[in-house]
Length: 482
Image 1 (cartoon, rainbow, N blue to C red):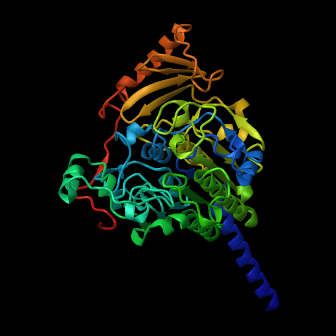
Image 2: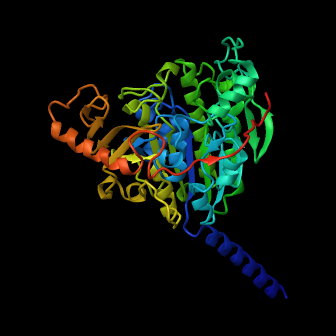
Image 3: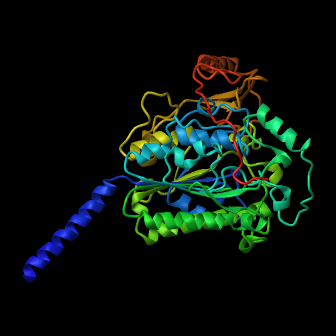
């Protein structure tokens, strides 16, 4: 009798272990940490002045991607990250999305969350979404099992709640031009949403419901709240493969580090918040180590665009700021960490981009990019797992800002199209010496490459053969009424 009971218990244990193993089935956990408005040299691994010990360790144990491209501003960058496409292909808007926008990322687009969900992954988004704030465009409609966060930037709220000023600065009321009638008219004319002093209160959304109005105190607590939820998700899903997308509102203006970090950098409010971001990354990595998941988890750390210089960001050695297609506006500090898989202390200057995460994560999960629709990303897994020497990556990158193609890069050469400025980025990353007169053949080659996009995404304007339709809703409404 005892022997039979032992046999049954052993069989049950074996079945449970087998079930857990089959749930993972060699698929790595994937964590994508996306910081808002972080400058290229804001963190230690890329020359930053503020202490960032956790990111320093992450770089020592992983890979630096030194030629990694985002987009000049928030919404387009996130569209590229989620869909594996140039932003204009899937989110043809002139700038970014605002509260109560009538348009957003089309629900028919296939996101990285949907690709991984089809491979058996638990999926979560914690933080800033910014791809449309109506329910039809929110994370639950784009492949995420759970969501907590603000659907757009932390400055898109009322002055009275501290959304238009840094802590301790005046919050004098602005004037909504023409009042509510003008706001409605403005929204009808511009489907990207409400702007300026017409913006409603910032909503904290949890799985489709408003769970709070984010005021100044809530902004101070935001990074910690997101990190708490991210750690909770990791603990809850540790037995199966999971995808955690953690797009912080930090370090976007207004600058609201937790009180524990105020003044800690001794440099600036922005660098205080950079330090809190580093602490958040440390908690994520420590949780993985505690649960012995580090050998099974790829963690990517990056930014959505270059940092805004007027808010204290540091984009050295590049020229330019957020919103620009100079390198300082679009090249972002990026790290990849996967102990035992990604070579410790490695670095690559290969041209990579946010478009590459979808095909990379799909390949690592044993899947593929969505079929039947064009994508622009390339699979970086050979680079991450085999090193730069075995990787044949992209040779051409197109710099779009809104609807307009502003520059093109091939290898070390970059051409700004409007003013015919040619730079050798290997020798002159700061784009200070125009080599157009000395190398007209390279300028001509890059001009030809730019022309290739004429019949795909177009060179200017919202319409082109390769541009897909926006998602659109009638009568968009804010989550919290003003």
